[in-house]
Image (cartoon, rainbow, N blue to C red; front, side, top):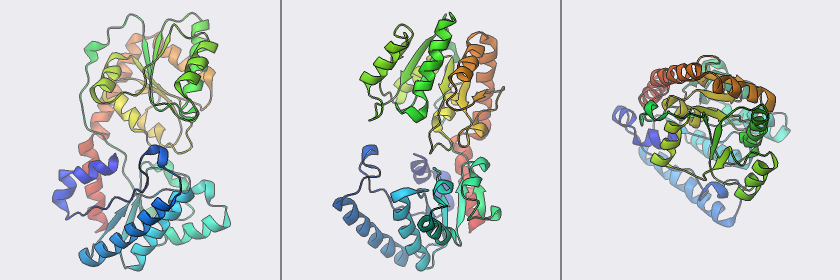
Length: 345
């Protein structure tokens, strides 16, 4: 999504003569990480296309968004190696992490040393620098948080007599949906009144049947509602009609989740964890609350604090909206990227 924003950016494309090649070989999310003859043929065709484009365009800078580890990294390693051997100056922009989890393996360590040699790196947050610190000096790193278009928000829709909580993400255990259900059980047992809307796609880990089973086992059928996937205006309606956004993620690849920016854009106080660069998004105690990972009791306490204090959650939501307008709009992101490219050139 961030790549598409750059591709469509008037700011970037008016400042530079840009040419784009899509490096993706996966057909969809379910296809990511899978191997096959089709992908190998497609990848070698992609390398040929890259070589021809470099020879024709002679670019002053090549911008790549690589994967940090695993099979997808090996593919991106080859792409960057081809670019280097053709004399290109390369900057990589990371939207994921995981280098530090693989750096002690002999083979991966050798590849990382080669990969990061002479590279400039863009990260989403200073908190993510330790992931690549072994291979990249701090003077070669730039920081550019994500930004998203402003679709506006309607605080007037928040006239709920009972506070509405919103969880919006795919149904993955590491995204914290089961931890959330455990926290909600604690709150219900204490007699607190609330409704929790869960919005997101099913996964191989948690399908609708399993989610309903988890909800029923905890006695939450009357307070938790699953709505499936929602997009566009339908998704915005959930943001506008909710009082608190809850995202207790401990996802290993979490860096700078756009969903938190969306919640702040809609004036919602956010409760999340300190995974990745999230603590740079949520100002703990001002725009929301940051809780430990996999900690249902702590999550329940944070939710209770906002359920019981309407004035606090409204003020946190407004402060979050102000922070979004200052730091995380698409315009701010475009200007940051443009400034970084100017510096690199």
